[in-house]
Image (cartoon, rainbow, N blue to C red; front, side, top):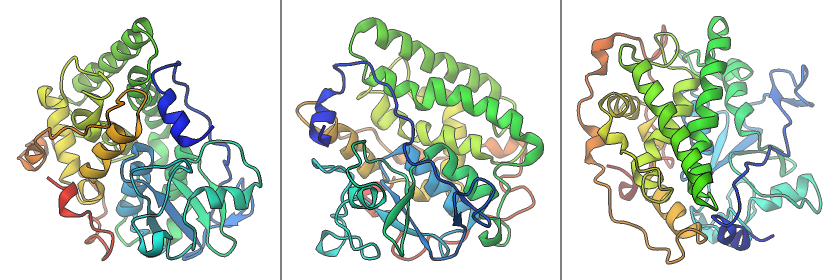
Length: 341
């Protein structure tokens, strides 16, 4: 099935997220489940779309941990064609490092005749041009735990060992009901499927709002992987999920706790500086023709609120623990003015 056929099918059958077909891991020495892929500065390239929340998580983790110089970045066009993610933002419509026009070429290099979908985030082995992994759940955890030798000085611990069980529990509920829940609602083929998914989304958001009313972060007193995963959905909520996916019981900006929490993270170096609202809106509204056949992209919402005071620092917490904020966004990776508040 082509990307165009797949996009047109959304809203006509119940949405089920595919498991990552390529789940190899890159580990400190290539062993211990590393499938022979060792962590090595300059060897791999992270391919993302700034529209995609799953890729957005990898972007945030890479920034917070200071992996920019060790792991290069390729950003795809937010608008896909029938060969899915493409490098039309680059000169000659080719990724300057991998030399390919479509991410599917790295998939094909890994598995000839690969019949599945082409997804981001994806990590590609530069010397061979082969895809290493598209396991969006594991990539960021390995950034935090396996790439430590290449972390910047002052990098936070995003997956602290004493809190992992709690982080995993929180992330499981957020993934099921919020991260994936908005898609189940937005691509629902009938009323009952939509209503069930939409109720799940807002029930989890209401529980999360209660949880965050008296604490700055989801687990412990520092930013963890759990916050990165929730942020990736919240930052897209009013721009696309509220209208495009019909998750419209209320807007994020109408929940004082979650809105302040999301703004707190957005204004934290490493979060908002990875977000391109232009890419986000154009991808969802133009690509998902099954539920928005006209391809019209709305003018709103007003983005200026993202930069307003949040006052969450009054709850205490230490964003980076014993560490420090990441430095400036590397040259060439800045989000264009069209995508910023």
